[in-house]
Length: 149
Image 1 (cartoon, rainbow, N blue to C red):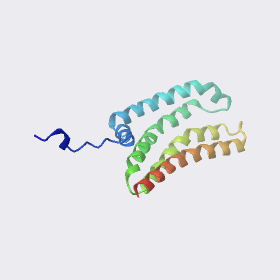
Image 2 (image 1 turned 45 degrees about the vertical axis):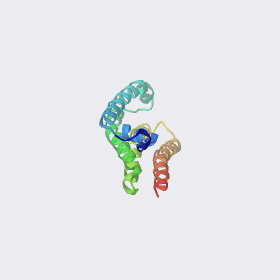
Image 3 (image 1 turned 120 degrees about the vertical axis):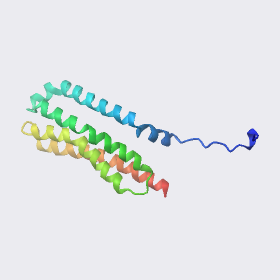
């Protein structure tokens, strides 16, 4: 039996590794899906009076919002899994999937309520959302890749 001082010390896992393990687990993805569906329904119910003012059909908004939850969660999961890989191509594609899934319900609001909204407000709104939705994951991926190399 080896003496305690002769044992190789166990390397502690980094917080990032622990977080990636948790976020990519099946129970977390399933919970995120359920949470996303519940959030979409509650948000549609709360926003329905305001959406009706601009002529937005709440049921179509809810359908788009609910249908974009799975690709949103799956693409986030894949992006996180690929943070440690050397290839950036898949991460960028999944980042775009996240951005499109995120923007789709808001794009419907801007299109359906277009007559009541200023066109410039719609353009600026969509550009701001798309910029933050795309640049955030890309910056994270590039920073992670730089650490690896």
